[in-house]
Structure formats: structure tokens, C-alpha cells
Image (cartoon, rainbow, N blue to C red):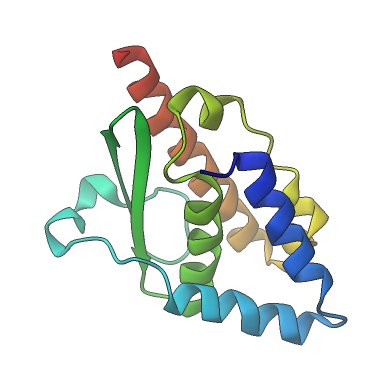
Length: 140
């Protein structure tokens, strides 16, 4: 399994292929379409990420020493953003997620392209993923 840093670098390299933001937006939307969906039983109020303009559900489980995330959103762009984060952090050790840098978000220019409310939602998504990882880390 690739490290978080390797996956983030792959994401940066992918986004570097696009010269304009329209192509990057389309790529984010495509990522959302390929997101492994959260099971309906986990689309609960408890799994809604607070601070997001759209509804975003995030579920995490700890299996074989790794954190596995599934997610969904009712907004196609937000779904793509959570898909990026799931790709970067899922199937990784809890400690690695907790300690991971999220600078790749700035390096692909995503945060500056988002409205303030979407940018806040992005921060909330990352925070929730790290909180889940922190909870799993304390179980070890």
C-alpha cells in the first residue's frame, strides 16, 4: 500500500496535468462519481459532517490496523472533494492519518478555488477524518 505522502503526490501530479481550473473541476467531479459509496445504514445524522454547506456523510471503521473511510454527499463537487480525501487517507494506519500533512490541498490550488463556506466544509472534512483516526489510534 502506498503511503499517504505518495498518494498525495500522485494527486498533485494529476492536477498538474490540467492547465485551467475547468479541467480540474471536471476531474474532481469524476473522482466523486468513482467514490465507493457509504452503505445506506451509515447515512445517519451522527455521520453527517458539521460545518459543510452540503450534506456529507463520512463513516470510518478500523480493520486490520487500518482506517477505512466511506462517504457520500448530496452535491457533486463536494462528493469529489471528499473522494480526494478518502483516496488520500483510507486504508492507512490511524497514527499516519493523525500525523499527515494536508498541504497537498493547497498545492493543487483547491482551497483558493472554493467559496468560503466550501473551504470551511473542506476543513471540517479533514478534521473529522483525523478525529476518527485519533479515536482508533487510542484503541491500539
